[in-house]
Length: 510
Image (cartoon, rainbow, N blue to C red):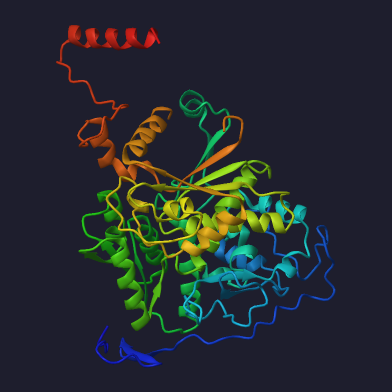
């Protein structure tokens, strides 16, 4: 950056210089809110009508190997249908309904409504409803496990429901998603008395966290906007760790500068090293996440840096696909409960939105109940829920081992409340000791009759220090009941035999 003017009253149009080119940062403009017109020849519920021009493009499964000088993007381009895509989406103010007079193109750089409220991405549901649930189930299932660009991604395999108008050439993807859903048999039976407990392990992803699902969408849209010569020189976020890892990785892939605001000394080394290694410009700031969030919002309002936090509703479009994946993995049977950790609270709404779209478009006949889990040291949603939704107050988030949800003033509070109210959901909290004991119990396994899914949003290896402290019994005022420290033994056959016999004897008697 050659120079930028930062110390002047905020004008309606802001300018700065980048690589000797003057770039104008214009405020967003309203667009016409008329819905896209579907092809009049389209037939409702035409699952088998392959010639319908409103039909989503199905991946081409070539029986012959592509030429050696052709990559999967080239192959997808060669096979791309010439029919016009008539699916669309737009921003509208959150919770105002599809007939809102205020709406914006997804190509606008806008994060809040005119009144200052949240935005939501609204899809043209009438166009999507021209195809029945069986059609969408078959289409999404046909893309699982393939390498066809971009459908090999668990997110982009639902492209029509995510960013229907983006050109596949603009998509930035590491084939994220398609994460493991495993039966936690021993943990459920032994510790909880549950026979049907499942874990959706979203931490099995490119950067080891759930955030990849939203970031592939957001960075892809930024990639599109930059190709359209929109005034964006980078993407920025505040983070407790995982958001910065995902943002920096996807920006690095696309060659887009990333800027990260992190609270100093409040995230794990494993999380800190990711944005640094991915080439992000990292600012370690002497505040907590809420303070970082306040700063990044102020900065992105002054400079043409795209805001990547979940205040930006594009992120939720990617994250909602994890809910659709759960249904796919259960062969489109709906679980009874889905438990989601809550920090900035975009996740709980994203899962609601994914399940809601599947229900509304006929892929399933009901929705699961959602549970938002918070740490007792950072529990503003839980306190609001216990008050009967009568009095929301932000809190000063105290230190918690669940550092990713150490947030006291969540930006998506309204989204979370809406989701929970509309699926008969509940909110629970866990103390620090409950968190660590449950972690130890879950690690040891490698409502009893209900099918319950717990969403794991990050890989456990990102939190090795807290696990070491727990198993070493070094956490102050905590019993660490399930600690499993290493046994110190002399390099002597007899000594080793003694401790092994003692260990095996104790386990044989159980």
